[in-house]
Image 1 (spheres, rainbow, N blue to C red):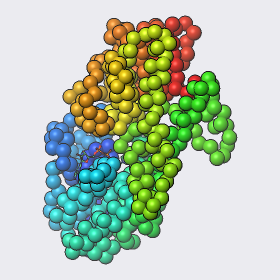
Image 2 (image 1 turned 180 degrees about the horizontal axis):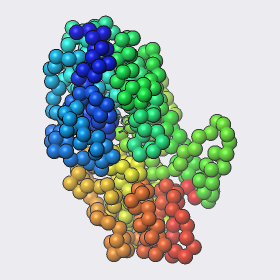
Image 3 (image 1 turned 90 degrees about the horizontal axis):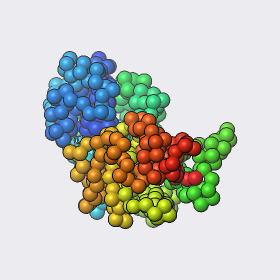
Image 4 (image 1 turned 45 degrees about the vertical axis):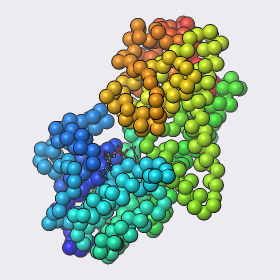
Length: 450
Ligand SMILES: NC(=O)c1ccc[n+]([C@@H]2O[C@H](COP(=O)([O-])OP(=O)(O)OC[C@H]3O[C@@H](n4cnc5c(N)ncnc54)[C@H](O)[C@@H]3O)[C@@H](O)[C@H]2O)c1
């Protein structure tokens, strides 16, 4: 086979697409491509995930794709599997696996490398690999060397692309289908192939850059931009606390400037699998040249300090009010309306409060008790014990001196407003500055940044 043949088979949808990693990135991509008529195998090393999908069972974040998922499972266009397969048709492997923060004994490319090697075991000339995972500078080149060590020549008889995913979960305006994608491609034919594929993803709104390093830096830089601005506004919120002015008033007034300003809003810190992690890739890259990249270092430092600041503010207020050290933390996912709890500020606040000997409990409608040890692992926390509430009924919330709202989910907003209105707790601390003050409530409502 040749890349030209793969192009023809992609055009007629006779190629086989194998997507490695069926998580937040890989699952929607699989369903989108399978729904548009491609034969897609979803490969995941998590056997529970594969079994769940084979049993047609979806988790909350996947439910919006239920109809398409059932259709393409039924017509055989989407097959979840534990391993890739040899086929007679051209193969396109799309890598959507996690990229951990590099540590002494773990490299960020560990899963990307194993997925690439796994795919190569069933490959032939003319096949292509598209990496969608966020990766450190140099990873595409490393994958090129692995591919070439198997007897292929990248750019001639094997295609390699880095096309980083930029999805923003729950963003109602910018979704998979309308977010433009930056892409590096080893050669023109491979670019034509991926244009045919991404036509069904984002109408082929692809911005081709000439080197893998550019694409790799772009991905990390975008998330660095977010982290730096989130840290900036959170530090401003601390100043506004001291000045006793509302940081939102400052942001809203600043936003009237029609150029050179973009609003970011305060919260308990950036979380998730991307924003606190990808800047570390850029920082590590800079360190290899003896550069400090202090902007990133400071932003990371501030981001990890905010949960401590919030815990200390709660302590100060409870001391002033002479109230017991008992707090209910509401909202444990890193973002509103999603179930992703990775690197989430809610857990960090719980941990801080626990270190200060608080009686702590948590509530999140997306929290699953059977995943509690996974959540702690994903948050790099050990030995944290806390109770979880099943709901926010009157009796259960009355026991707490304070509710600390870290994340406002649509599912809890109304109930939290009711708890406040009915003065069910003495003190509410709103990290996101979203609740509306009510003169009738006896509850003290404080915001981060006011
Ligand atoms: N979640 C987001 O919003 C988002 C946005 C943009 C980019 N990204 C990036 O996309 C990548 C994937 O993120 P995610 O959130 O989808 O992760 P995820 O943890 O939700 O899913 C990854 C899946 O890959 C599987 N996996 C691990 N190693 C594997 C292997 N060798 N072969 C096959 N499957 C394997 C895991 O079992 C898991 O199911 C990461 O690099 C992330 O930084 C994520």
